[in-house]
Length: 575
Image 1: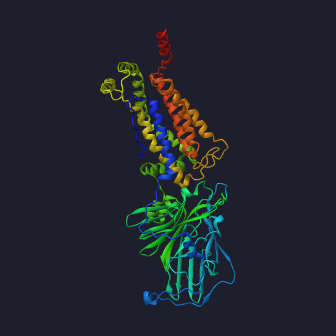
Image 2 (image 1 turned 90 degrees about the vertical axis):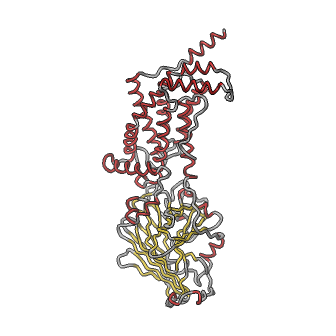
C-alpha cells in the first residue's frame, strides 16, 4: 500500500472530493499501520517445537538424566564438579537504585519484579515490567531453558545459595547437587540501566547449552492491546538489519534464530530488555507464545516471551529500560535501531528532535510544543497553500466554461471517441487560463506523511509518554474521558474550514451532502487515536481558518455557488 497514491477520476473532480479521498486514504493508512507495518522477518534459522515440548523442557524434573557422551566434548571443556550447594529456605533480595527496584528470589535464581521508578503507569504507580499475573503460570524472568537434554535437577525450582554484593548492587546465585551445577550472577550500575549478567550450567563437568528466559509478556501492563506492541527482536550483523518477531510468529510453536547478533531481547512501544553478548561468536534467541492473563485483563491472551543464550557459559551486558535514543546510543550505537520511526523515518526522526528541543528550550510542555511546531509547519507551507487557494479560485472561475463544454458533449459515453475530444477541450481551457486541476491536492498530499510521522513519534518517543496538556493526561494515548473533547472540537473546526474553502460552482447537492460527512468521518477516525495527533490536526485547522480569513481580506471572499438560481432557471424552462 502506498499512502500517496491518488487516482484522479476521468470526470472533472472538485477540490472537496479530492480532499475527501485524501482523508480516507489517511484514515486507512493510520488504521492499518499497527497491524501491517512491522511484519515479522523470517529468522535465519527456524526450529519449531510444540508448546507441550517447550513446557516439558523447562519444568519436568529428572533424576536419571544420562550424561552427554564424553567423546563428543573436548577434554578442556570438562569443569570441576562441585559438591552439594543450595539454599536452606526461599529468600528474596532487592536491588534499589534511583532508576529501578528489582526483586530476586533464590528459588530458581529468578526475578519476580522489575520496576522503573521514573516512568509511571497510567494509574500513576511506578511501571512494573514483569507481568505479575503470569507468575506461576509460566516461568519467571531469567529462568533456565534447555536446548537438548533436561538436567538432573529442576533448576527453576531449586533453592540457590545466594551471595549478595557488598555494595548492594548485585547478587551471585549457585546451586549444585554433585551432578548438575548452575550459577547465575547479576551486577548493576547505580545510575544507569545497563547491568552484567552471566549464567553457567554443566552436568558432570560438561557445559550444557542453555538460554535465559523472560516469559509471559514484557513492558507496560496497562496498554490496551499488548499483542500488537510486544515483540522479540535481534540485530543481525550479517545483514545489518533489525529483525522482529510478534507473538503470532510463535502461534504454532517456538521459533528460534541463531547467528551473529549485536543484541537480542524483547520490546514494547516505549521500553526494551536486550542482551548484548560479550565475546560470543553467535547467540540464539527463541520466541514463545504464552497464553496468560494480564494485570488489567484477567482473560488469558497470547503474550510474547523470549529466551536468549545458547552456550554453556553465557555472558551478557543487559539493558532494561526506556527507548531513549540518547541513552541507547551511549550504550551501543546499534541499540538506537530499537526505536521504530516507521516508513517516513526521514520526517519522523527530525520531527521528534524538533519537538524535544522546542519543549526543552522554549515551551516546557509537550502539548503547547505540538501547537507551536504545528503553527510553524503551517507557516512554512503558506506559499504552497496560497498557491493552492489561487488554483482553487481559478478552477471556480472556470466552472461556467467547463459546464458549457460538458453540455456540448452531453450524454456521451466513456467509450465514445468524442469523449477524448471533450477531455482535450477541458485540458486546453486549463492550460489557457493557467489552472491546475490537481493543485488543490498538493497540500493534502504533503499532510499524509506529516500525519503519519506525528503518529509514529507519539507512539515511540519516550519523552511524549505521559506528557500532559490541560485536561489531557497523556498525549500519547487518547483522552481518558467519557466523551473525548478534542475530536469534537476538531469536527467543528473542520466544518468551519470546509465552509470557508473555495468550492466548485457546479457541485450538485449529492456532492455537497457527501462533503458534509467528511468532518464527521475525520472526527470518528481521530476519536481512537492519540490526543497529541488530534491536537496536531486541530491546530492545523485553526491555522487554515486564520489563513483563509487573511486571504479573503486580500483577494476577496469566494463567490457563492449559484445552484439555487440554476435550479430556478431549470424549473422555469419546464413550465
